[in-house]
Image (cartoon, rainbow, N blue to C red; front, side, top):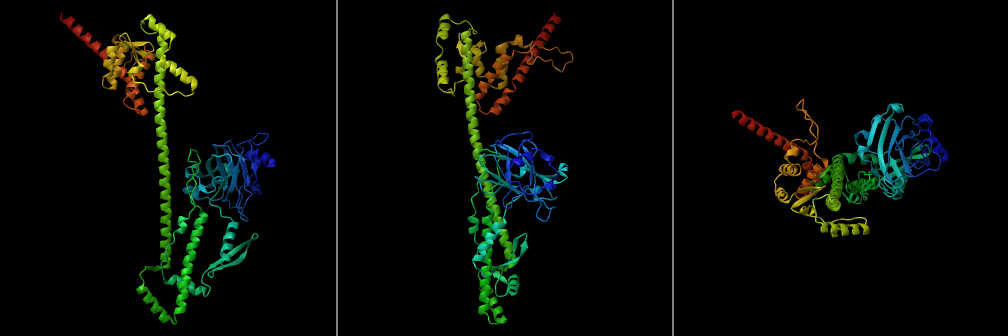
Length: 553
């Protein structure tokens, strides 16, 4: 393994893919220039097992690997199949695998097909999402066709296996044929046709043992009763294990076990063949001449209550019915997946609402602490000496309770406080924060104002006054509508923040939607600009009236 690891350090400079001799075996891919024991995340590739195929691995970057597959036996120009395992992964490790030497110009990967994947903890084959699979022609690799797919490993202890499609090994086929042969069915015959690279080629014959040619012709020509379709093989399909409902990027499509489906199909075929053999045997034993057989068949068809169809039409109907059953199962799986997604989204919305309420509570607590600190520093209006001393000696009970709770626990969730309780009332004035006081009567009148625009404009007049606003601007930048416009000094940023906080408290009483709150808060500068323009316009109108009076005099 150490020898193969040193080979990986050279990257793509190893040589052409013609030198690929065998499958990789516990091949550790190390970054260029790395010396030492492999760490977690240094992937180990293996394809030394039945139906495995992976001849070479090149380390491109930390997240990208080029894979070279071996050609088919006795056909070096045909390179399609791949099947390999990957281990020694890190949790949440994302990689891109590029199978760089495909020989087919057209592939179902262009039409939505995706590679298969399974792991030791989830042994059912599932498909990688087709949105993560790309099939294209790459000029960097002799203009060969490249299939790239992205994948995220979610469990460190698992060994992951990737394949072109559902693997079906030679050993599995032989076991299945041996089981059929041990049942000694009259209509099943297994013969050795030849050998292919030391492996036997079986010839299977499924027909009546009496007369194969006559039975084949009669089955294709005569009409048969439709046997009852057994759906046991549909109900016995294995359960599907979903990859990572918790979060992870390994979200494969659900599929059923191909082996159980093939067994169910074989059971159905055996039932049909047995029914044909039974009908054929009955017709041969009970009929003495062709004329009598024809008469009995006609009478039986006239007396039959069940519908009869030709065999070809029956097989088409059977295939159509099975396809509809398969589509119905896929629809049910999609509905179940959609239901789970909706449940997860509902949980996220619930958590989001809890976070919003916690953020509001923390913002209220922060403002109250700021007000207490400003009172201690004497930034507010004149306060009675005794009250100042009492506040400086003994902190407020709520603040003291807050400090004690923060000392005892790492997380603190204060109780929600009404908007009016967050502002300090003193000597007929209301403290809005940052040393800004407004008249208490005007403040109460402001709270009953309708509309965000009117509320913001009246609050700006209360904080700055009309004399200051008419000589200021919100941003301090000259307007572009006038060429010779002179920029006015901007408004104080901390006072603008007080206006936004007051408007936020007002909006938070009406809605909890953060998007709506942010949208309404974004219009604060616009409202103040409109108020400044209204004040300047009224001042100009007043000057015009005075000049008109002066001219009349």
